[in-house]
Length: 474
Image (tube, rainbow, N blue to C red; front, side, top):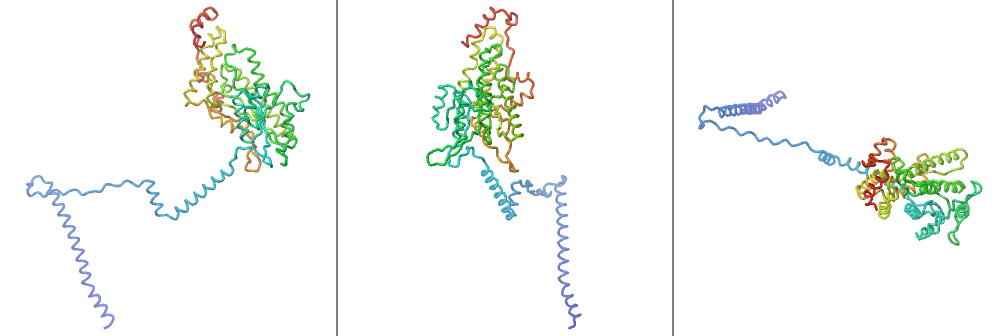
């Protein structure tokens, strides 16, 4: 059989299969059309009302459509992507985990511990002088914290009672330093006789015990802590003796102490700091009835600024000064319940020492201001300020050497550090907000009685009207 014959017989054999396929397709197409026509006729007849119900075909039930599913959520899409891309997921988790671990470890490694530096033999070598009255709770708190952090702390005393308070701390490295400001050296560069003990420590080697290599101490800083309790009231009611005491103890004393310590601080080419702690809220707001505090705080701030410029000029000319002058502006700081109780108990009692006419003129406004301050403090969550720990951290950071910068040198310390609740806020408010609005914020009100407006200089009427109004204070 030739190849042509094989092709002919193969073609004949495929004809029945093609006929069967074509006939099947035609039959299926006819069935679909007939079914569609039957359904259409059935639906049409079922909707005709003229046909009897006995022969009317029933209506076809509507098809059951499944409700459309909501789009998948982001978490579902992320989960599906993780399941379909396991390799990429493992790589990303490894990268993020390693990076987070390195960042956390770097921060832990470079975090400075607030501890004073020690000598090579392990003894304490950094000295800090706290110039303030041991009767003040802030002086004792700062001195105790610096001693716990590894400093040798000297607290200035002027009487045997103050020395007894320092000794009652029972700390070996909290020592008293007698400082007599009435005697001055003959020349400004001469060391004051009261400071010879400090001069010996920073110039001569000291051995902590026999057989141990001696070391030389370093005067790291001077912390000036003036009293935060100022006389309050109208200017007309503050006596001359109160003004003199305020200026001598809170303004003149820190200036003279700084002057006495400058020869010691500039004696060796070591970095040291002068810290000035003073309240700032009243001075920032220029608050009424607080003229002694406002005048003293602003004078101390001006003194610190001028001294800073002098020492910086000296450093830039001949490199002879490495002293940082840092001003710590204090807000509301909580030193404990006993301090708050004593402070609140003494508020308003000074009104009893005023003259009757002064009570009538200023008493209502002054007491309304006190009531506003006490009420605001009592409704601030039971706390009168930030914890004293924030002050301790700020003092240490100001005394410690500045951290290194990215370029190898050391960063310059901040000139002004705000510590305590309200210190920075009230500083901004005092510079921006008008004085009238500040007075309204302080709760100041004009509270003169009608009788005083009619007879302001009648002392008999003033005294008679004030006797009944001030019985509660007595």
